[in-house]
Image 1 (cartoon, rainbow, N blue to C red):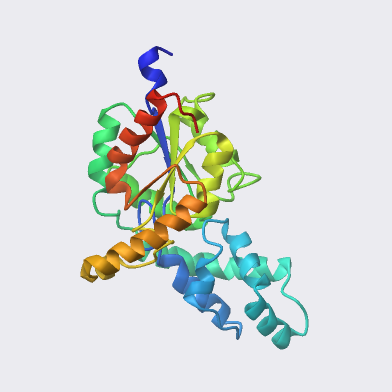
Image 2: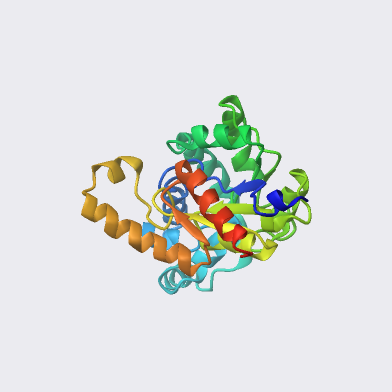
Length: 273
């Protein structure tokens, strides 16, 4: 690698919901609330958001362990929520979530322009997601039809250990031809587990604050909010992502060129992830 390349980002690994598609990461939320409601358990959108970024079976299991949810389940079933329950609920969740994900499969505004520009500069792209392969298959086809063709899509059930483990990231590095170059790759995500898989792989991480789970607003709500409300919400979401280890935080993937420029400045000063 020449000295110029030592200070350059060569690839990006992107998350899907809340990062590339589904502004506000709203698709999974309604599905989780409906899923538990079918079993007589009330959960809030706020509760549903807490484990976001984990593989979906682990997300469901984490919800089942939450005090208010666990108490309702125990009262109804006379026993604690267990892993078999999580698997049963996942089986119900997948078709529900596949539909809601399809309903919110539009790219985040500005993503395709940024993707086109960065791809033209020679950057490689791959993706990971907490969604299962069954949920993702139609989304991948829709994205491909719109011109998004990453080197690899790693779903949570494609690997033995999904996020926050780096196994998915490692598969992406290999697919992009960047094995051993994790420090020249950025993981872009809107959740703590998604950022953690990037950190575990030895990559730079960029958090998306406004479009993602940490804020959780629709694009319409964001556009209609006052500047002061936007600033307050952005600050809160950014703090969550920084606490999760994000090296840089941007509003959305439309701002990726700015984040890359900042990180390349840090690399030129000798900083590493």
